[in-house]
Amino acid sequence: MKFYGKADEVAARIVEAFKAGNVPAALAQAYISGCKDNHAKGYSLMNRFIVAINGYTDANGFQGWKNAGRNVKKGEKAFYILAPITSKIEADGEKRYIVCGFKGVPVFGLEQTDGKELPKVAEDVAQYIDALPLIEVAKAWGLTVDAENGKDGAALGCYTFGKGITLAVKNLSTWAHELMHAADDKLGTIGKKHGDYAFNEVVAEMGGAVLLTMLGKANEADTGGAYEYITHWAAKVDKNAADACVAVLSRVCKVVDFIMQTANGGAEVEEVEAAE
Image 1 (cartoon, rainbow, N blue to C red):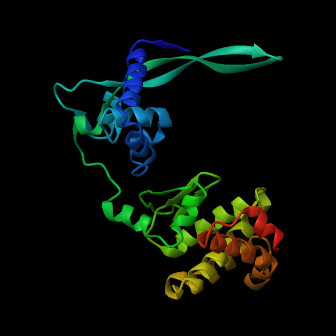
Image 2: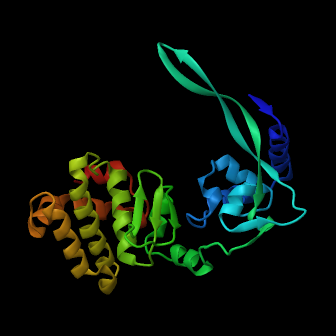
């Protein structure tokens, strides 16, 4: 692999980071994202790592910071992240692109700029995430749990298949709902066809309420709100709420059981399936 321009300096900086022994801390910083307003969150893990080893929490190009309402301070020098150089080839009658090298792209760290204050995830939000009930289950499955700024009309939470959970509100029923999606996916019982979506939502909402009730958090379970949510999604498959719940009851129990077994010692998928 070839490095062009400043890319060779970036590669050398990465090697030095390994020699200095500060890679674990830098990688941890690279994995931790503040919110969607963090520009580096859209970078590859390698480039987030580069931002971290340069001592910054976020990075953007000169014009990018200007568009965000901030300006690079006088005298600050850019550092470089890596952008792939691609080449189009033809193989087996198909045209595709391959990465044949990297070039350096100049960026500036957040701390090298001033101007409009950027939204950040406050420390109390990070503490809230760490204190979530059953957070150890998500960690055991290698899922990230992140936060973003809530917006009108947007989802209160989101589960990304096999990757993680993002929360836009401080609400335990939303957390339990998304954790149910994650467990449903982990077990391989979640429906991934378009027509399965409504039943996935019923499973997540019903199971989330069950989980919180089991944990002694009946108020947070918001069973009234859960019933309204289930009614909404049941109607999309021409069912009433009761019929929809009965249709997925076995699946809900299986997913809830899987979460609780994982929390109590790390159940394997095979063990849960064998017990069905």
